[in-house]
Picture 1: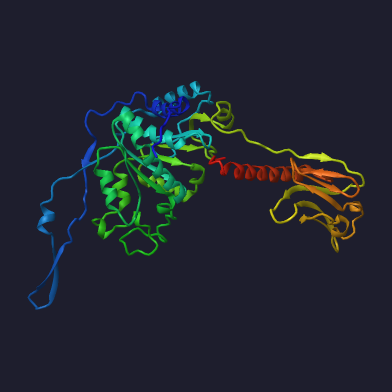
Picture 2: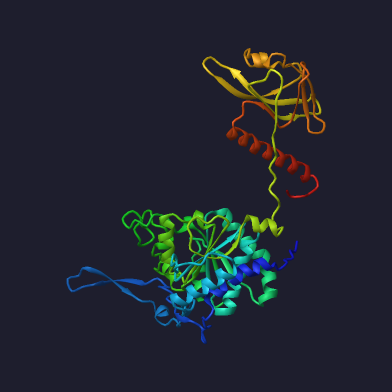
Length: 441
């Protein structure tokens, strides 16, 4: 299956909001390369020698191949040349254009600045931040990015988005992004990340690097240190280097997906170890505020017809003869082999209290009997259950309840709980109805 993507103006605006923060930044005339440290690529040779007293000594020698290895270049993001005053002025200008309260100061949460993008769920924030990477590369030459996510499920979803959108961005920018999921068992991809001069993206979930950084408990050292995360450990299979050091040398840009789930002190402290150039936070519900540059909230998204209307099912309050307590008709269940039944919620007299219970009832069931003789339910024996239309239940005293009708003593809080229950039931009913038509609800 091939996907076709339509370029939406609101997504372009969100991309530009980040890119324009750095107006005045000059693209470097030359690649920002550095001498890449490959580590000890070939194991050292160890040989035995004897001293004058005849005792064995061990002497280490460098392998000839290692001593003659070629110089290797790594590539990092060029530093931001704008000072704090210039960055803040750019941010205020963007905020003014996007009807956002101007920032009083520059927030340096991760790197030189931390930017917030607020986008309602379902409006394509993953598309936006992938496109933002391409634009930042086009305008300023930056090509090292790390996407940090709070779970494995989101991580896999982001990788899938890169796969699906690969051709789309290739047609727009004439290049592809090299993306991979950080895997502590395959550290060679980190070397590729550092040595490549193309757009490189590492996707990582915070559990891979955000363990407590208590130095005594999580000592950094060689691979054998108990409790140490691999990303902070010197690994023999990685040339006796720490993966975090190789990553930090590239001065990456951090993209935080759902940052409200990444604001723990261990995660925040650990992210600084990446030596980020700056960070951008994408969420519908920001908890910690930084420099907000774009907002597409729920109302904006609905007004622009970008998301479906939220449906809330109402409850009808009724007054029945003799009922001064509580009765709620939830739903009618049907079966091809059994008569329809109705689920009612009513009150039951117990030893020392009155409790509300939900029961699935049939014709001829008596609420008076089932409530242990509560007088308000006298005469309430089910005479008919009709599932047609909205669905009704009729009692022998002539009273009729429709599904979602509630009567008697209902507090505002309890009414809201019933309303939520009805809304969920309606959603699942519609889901079931549309599923057979191949329609996602």
